[in-house]
Each structure stands twice: as C-alpha cells, then as structure tokens.
Image (tube, rainbow, N blue to C red; front, side):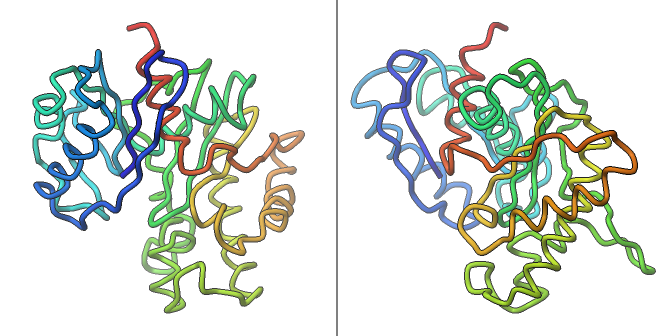
Length: 262
C-alpha cells in the first residue's frame, strides 16, 4: 500500500509504503487511515485517487473481482475512504493507473498510444490513449487471456505471474537463477505481449512490475521472442521498454488522473 500527498497537483510529496494486511479489508482501511492522517498532517485534501488490483463496478466504488484480494470484494471501498479523508475519491484498477503514470511521467512520455503490462503477483495492464486511460466497458484484464489450450484453458497469468511461477516451480521469482526457467517464462510472456500488441496496436509497450524490475527476468530475450512472433503480422514491432517509475508509477498515474478535466 503506497500513499502520497501532492501540494501542487504536479509533484508527489513524501511517499509512505506499508504492507497491506493480508486479505482483511477492515484492517486495511484502518492502516490506510493511519498513513493518510500522518501524511496530511491536519490538512484537508481537495480530492484523492487510487488504484486496486481487480475489476470494479460501473461506479468505480466497489471491487467486484480480485483473485488475490477476495476479502476486499463487495466492500464499500470508495464510501469508507471518502468518509476518512472528507473528500471525493476516484478509484481505478491499479495497473491502469500505473500505465497512466508511465504514459504521463515515465517511459511512454510523448507517445499517443501506449500499452502497459505489469507482471507481479498477477498480470495486469492497460491501454493509454492521448494521456488518458482508454475507455472500456469492464476494465482491462490481459493477464487472463488464454495462451494455451490442451484440454484446459491456461492463461498468461498462470505461466508468468509471481503466483503462477510459485505454483509451477515451487520458488518465488527472486529465488530463481535457472536460465532455462527464465527463458520459458520470457517465451510465454512474449506470446501474451504479441496478443496485446495485436489487440491494442500501441506505439510503445511498457513492461513493469516486480518480476520485470526485481528479478533475473531476461528482458532482451523476451524482446527477441516477441520480434520473431510479431513480424509476420505487423511491418515492425512497436518499441518495447521497461518502466521508469518503479513502484511509484501508480502514484504518478493517480496524480495525473486527478488533474485531468472531467
């Protein structure tokens, strides 16, 4: 859980990071309240924005589905936080906000159409067009695209996410040094990126998340596999780059989201 306050709508102040207390919504709300109170230091915010992993209802007030946070599903997230801070709250999918952050302040600055893919406990992503999260009916869930079918549908998230790697190999990504395993993961991710590029036709694709930024993931090998699979369809592969803002991309995205006209 990362929280920051901006005094001018352009820059982040102190960033406070704390471990989310498991799958306990009430405890998570108490923890957020304590951090927000500390950072606000008696000030009242004009508005707030934040991201959470999973799909939201049409009002972006309640989490509908979240494989990694089932205890937060159906809880009055927007209502609770608005009561705490005394200001309106805008909630988005966390990967969508991270993508917006990279498009406005990170590796995709200057590009009109960007795709962002994050690989962490799960796999998420978003399409950013002209500095805004692209319109959608129910969010973006690229991690659940099917990339293999052998009698049972298997998703990208099952192959390349931290939770998927743990189930398959019995180790967390940061513990894996076997190059053969990493090549397999890179190849699987390249298939998912291939599909994402075909669907979203971006000018640039940004890869982020702990598995990309904090492990031995072979980024150049993944780009090689991607180029080999995409070239027969598109005349060239869009630029593929690593996220620049690290674990603060979502905070920058939240700030950009708040400052956009409505």
